[in-house]
Length: 295
Ligand code: ARG
Image 1 (cartoon, rainbow, N blue to C red):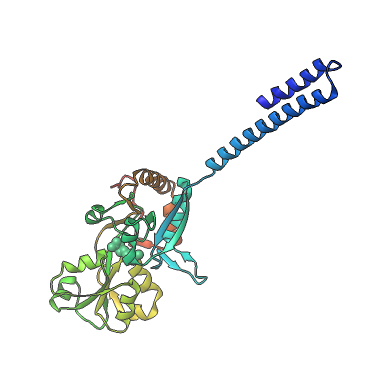
Image 2: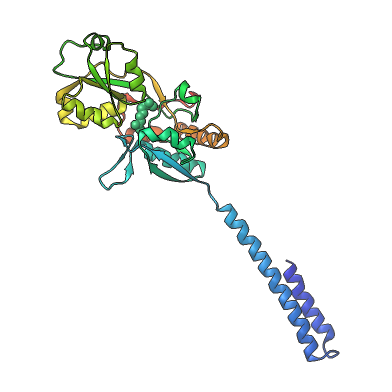
């Protein structure tokens, strides 16, 4: 606005001085004011640009995901990240006003990478556990799940894990997961661990183990999609535990947790997460919790 008043001043000065001063001095006055006007225009524009670039600076989160956990997160036929949690994190970040980038990290590297700040968040069907809460923070739960057990068909007369323990069966599980911790409770069971969840199933098909424990959604999915597996194995009961998945954060990122929780709450309440549950056919093996189940 100062530029405009200077412009008026120039005009007035030129009118007043008209006839009394030389063409040269009028020209130099004009030059002086023009340069002032230009300067103020630049300042105004400069400030304006500065402001808008600050406003458009959206925080970009780096989010780790283990893409070996169908139907939660996996690489599709086009080699792109896909699945329930890929859709979920897209909705959560968008709703919370963040930009994001997904990085595909193996199960074993997720927690260490978060703590050493290689990424800002982890979403990978991670169960909220008290022991994990000592090192990391969790969002409110977005899915209720649990463990499910498959045993080989040719192992007859087994109805329970106690029986599997008695017969000292070899049961597979992904290392350091809740399935692995679950099996540790049954003395007698020989636990065979795998870095990748899918390998436990391949091993079952090859009779490298007598059964497999895994997260109910994945076990169910593999069982239904894989003909060979469904001919070779059967469920021992259905979902045997109740667990809740949360997005994992660093403990100090309190403000980020607040925003992620608020976003998740909205998406649970407005039915978005239930729609994703339907889209990915998670069935009765997983349920969308009510937002008051916070932790
Ligand atoms: N829910 C289980 C846990 O937290 C298994 C998670 C495994 N996730 C994965 N992406 N491999 O221990």
